[in-house]
View 1 (cartoon, rainbow, N blue to C red):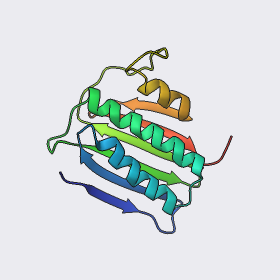
View 2: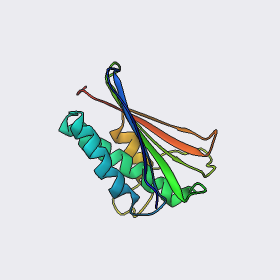
View 3: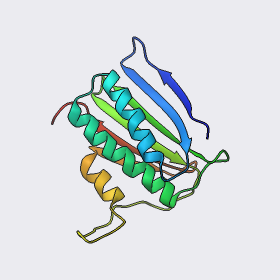
Length: 145
């Protein structure tokens, strides 16, 4: 499967990566490794890294469970550090056309349906764009509140 990466950085206050990964159940672990490396290189706090790995895992798992791959059987995952705004921005795009996505209540015995609720609890803000496929976006503060 292709793995396309695109990076930008330099003197700007925003540094980002964009990867295309297989539309497969193993993709969250691949993305976690890549995101952890990106955040470590750019000296993010350990708590930000931990939260980001949870959020991106849930975003990808939802895309693979409920979305559709693109024509190359991949999904697109992006992350960026916007130091001027103090934010880590995450997004996962799949080719599926989704209705409104909302977190649902779950109990301790629930085996599924927790993803958006977890994202909602861990991320500072999240939203969905369904204008071209489905893109789930999330923001996490780089500093403690």
